[in-house]
Image (cartoon, rainbow, N blue to C red; front, side):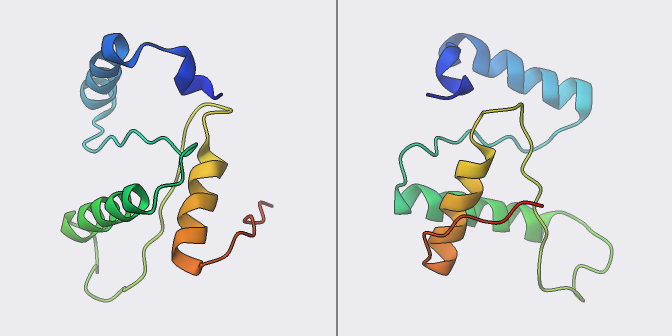
Length: 100
């Protein structure tokens, strides 16, 4: 169980999204559930992230071919689970990422 299990998404999802969009200028919000490691969901999320990254205007985007992604959230919401799921999907490894 993680923190997302503790809220009623039907009631709070839209107010949370509205808050971050209007108060902080966030344009892309992605809700994830990493308790289930579905290859199709990870693939879909990866395509969405790459699409966002390649279509957002950035300085010298044509020069760089790699991207850096930051995963943020309140404690115990599954950030490491998401990172490890995405990592194992792309690298074919079950080994957890080292956090320093």
